[in-house]
Image 1: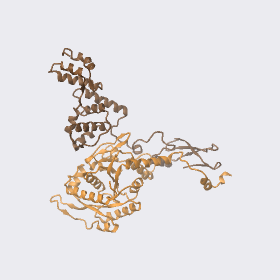
Image 2: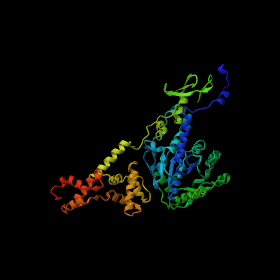
Image 3: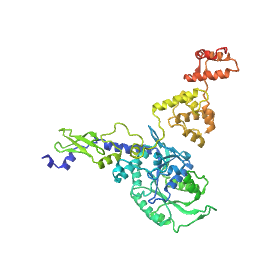
Image 4: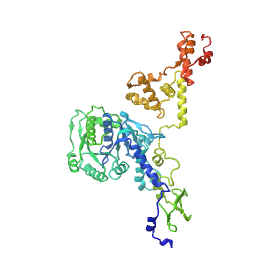
Length: 300
Length: 234
């Protein structure tokens, strides 16, 4: 009786062939990412386990600082449901599809910018999925992973020195591993936190998680670290604690502290670029110098 | 997923994929040895998984388009910038060429396009520096025309010994049509044209030559365009 045959024994004897070409397509997808990303010298993700800490603001200003330093910079906004990088960098427009891929928007300092916002009809339009997601939200992770893959593989990034990837909030659980999975040569993550104890607890979880995934932590940026007085410009500290404890505990470099600043807030809201000599710009320039130093062994 | 023919102890091979119903795929496999067939019908969840992976069972007939999965799974029709098919691109280029030929064309880059087409150039060199204002202006040009125009402006800048490209340089370059060669006989005939209209006639004859893709004004062209300037003594 054939049904009584031992399948394990049979499988040892016969050769598998991918004649449905599913594996081949998955390999091709990964190769497409590697080919496109291969033209980019350094890839950095900006992450935090907590929402509302200023990841996008940090990403936007870090990219500006890298560009001011003379680097060719790209910014990938993978906050698929709340994309705001184009708005912060003062660009609007749509993807133009060409045989080479989707053309990113060109922002300040010739930065290349790609975001889900480039697909949406208006600023207020939410991202809503059809197909698998209409069936069940359990498919969201798989689908978003493949959307992110397309943003990496199908956007015409060209040759860049730095690609900064703005991750969505709550990123500890899925996006960094996804990005790292596609980019084994990911150079590392910049983690954004605030002096809040609650934030730091969540941020620590995300750092542990990302480290477990093999993602290198480049350092910590403490946002909302005090405030600049809108009248006299003096820096005031309103938080009880700071990030020194988390830095010491996790052995992370503190890349810099960014205070609340009215002009920074206005610049982000209006999509304007702060002047290079603005105190906040200088702070980001310092952060970029530190990142460059940390990455120094891998010369551009 | 694979199926094994237990009788033949062989993997069944993929044969075809069908769509028997909404949110369902029917995938047929056959045993390469005994010919037995089996059809697997996916449930909506399994179909969703295949779709979410962005793969086509059995392989793709045509390559994936840029951002295909993202565009297909967005509920609202994604808004895209205008893109151009090769036929449309050719049409736009021809239109721009016509503008170049007509005096007072509106396209600020049409002259450059014509010049670059004539030169048959390939890539911008990037050896000259573009000012932010010039860069912003060039970004407004449709992407498929941009490299050609960039090259035209850079070529002009190098010719003029300029290292920086500004909007003013772009303006100047659009009017730079390059030197048109004249055959000796044509020069002699040009000299016969009254001096007060000679510059205008020269410009018009060169325009006709460019329109025809010629790099030199020949005797034959002068003869051909004679009727246009009848009574001008040449």
